[in-house]
Amino acid sequence: MAASLTFASCYDDMLTFNEDNNATGTGDGSYATELKSGEEISGYLKAAEGYVVDNREHKYQYQHSLHVQDFAGYMSVPHNFEGRIASSFAFNNDFASGPYANFQWVAQQVVPVINTQKTMPEYAPLYAMGKLMYAQSAYDVAVVHGPVPFDDYLALKETHPLNYEKQSEVFVKILAMIDDAIADIETYQAGPDSEVDNLIVMTDEATKESDAASIIEEWRKYGNSMKLRIAMTCKKVQGFTYEGKTMQQVAEEAVASGVFEYGDYGMGLTCGPDQEWGVHPLYKIANNWVDTRLNASYHNILVRCGADKLLEYFFVKNTADLYNNRKQLVATNGTQYMSMRSGVYLRDKSNDQDYILYSRFTNFMQGEPLYWMKAEEVMFLRAEGALYGWSMGGDPEQFYEEGIRQFLTRHGYGDSDVDAYLTNRGAGADIDNPDYQYIDWYDSDNNLSTWDGMYLLNNGYGPTDTNKYSSGDMPDGSSRSMEEVSLEKIMTQKWIAMYPMSNIAWTDIRRTGYPRLVPPVTGAYQDADGSIDENTYVRRLPYSYGTDTAVKDEIETVAVPVLNEETSSSVTGNRQGVRLWWDVEGVGNFD
Image (cartoon, rainbow, N blue to C red; front, side, top):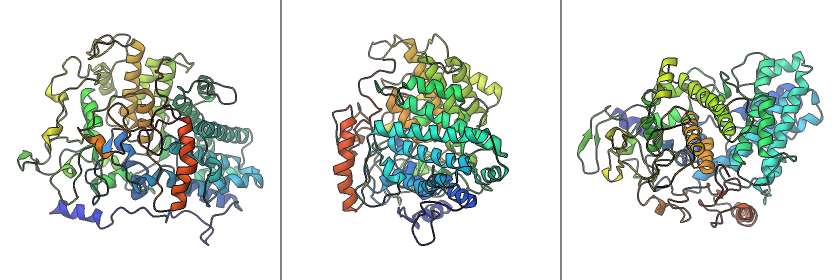
């Protein structure tokens, strides 16, 4: 009965996306174009910090957990939201509205700040904060949807049609804006001011520093780290340059200028029951609203890598006695970690004896930071770059192990536990061990013992790998280079450490092919828009247009032609199977 009451509390406030964004406005329903004081600048920036990765639960759902988190293999929706989504691959026009909405809300807050630099240049580091948040938000939309109205959002244009710019142009503009922000910070660092220092401390919510000099240095590192992220995202686009520099050169310059290092926090909001921003929104979405559950890929790869402590840190076992779809008792309360394969057929919320009883979160998730960027991400980016022969300030193994160590020690592991993890052989040659198989406790038709394409790697970074499915021993008889094996290790451990940052994880999966996720259930692609299959997977989230005919026309006549112009796939249009500009078909990781 207690469980039923908890479920009901969610559905009394059924998901409805609205435009009441609670953004700081002028008081008359409009938005300022310039601001009047340092205190007003600070207020606008603090509001924006809550929108980059939205701390409001419903808005976070639309931004991440209703779609992208499943594509990333992290979490899945366990019911059909009153018939609105048949499975995780089914496109819901309303649910897809989140990424652009958050970009718009960030723009409404930071654009007036950026515009004020012309009249009050003395607040340079605050303008830098605004530029970096705008750049992050534009990137997040570009890697989810494709073309972006970068300049029109920067002008706060609200009348349609908006001009959707080519992705190749947008990434150049994002890099230029980041460089402007870094220059603003470095100019200020050469001659700080006590009044501005006070505003920096009053404004910052995204670092864990307490003095202005340390805060603004972390924002500077954040800018360089974003440049490294973007360079790696665009690596496969042959001939793409920024100010005449290749992506390798952009990455190397960013590292030389100073990125996040081992021991750094990164960038994001501090969460918890006693924090200003509240608990991490995923905790409430899962534990109060039963709207998301553990995905089979994250569950199964953690098990195969021997990361049982991490599974225990984040997730609880089934939350009630579970009966399967044949009405048989298969698991008593609290006895099994349970996860969902992507694409399962979803039932109505009233069916409370199926996936809603699967693994949700422990209380540790309440205090998980709402990250924009983890320092661990930068370590894995440097490991990947070093593997390609780029100058990253160290070798791949160093950064690989630092990324693993930092993530695990922040999530329940001691140093000796990490050492043991790094020597763990994973599933190894014991591929048929039932411990490594996927079980769907509700519907046994979805069980998966073993499958071709699942490469079982040990956790250590070494020149040789004796596990099955390393180089020269593929299920189809083909072979891989050891560099490719090393890249899979880097990307698999990065994916584990990025949890639950789904935009980054899904982008990495599309650009490198790693990690190899648990396959969707049979028939899953039938719920999609007809443009994806087991060979293409989901390449993008289609644009949302709602019921506004002007927006729908804008997408069809402005955005889609630009999207089609830069795709390397045969699929075109506002569809799930269209490869984005940076997701180049037919180009290998070491080409």
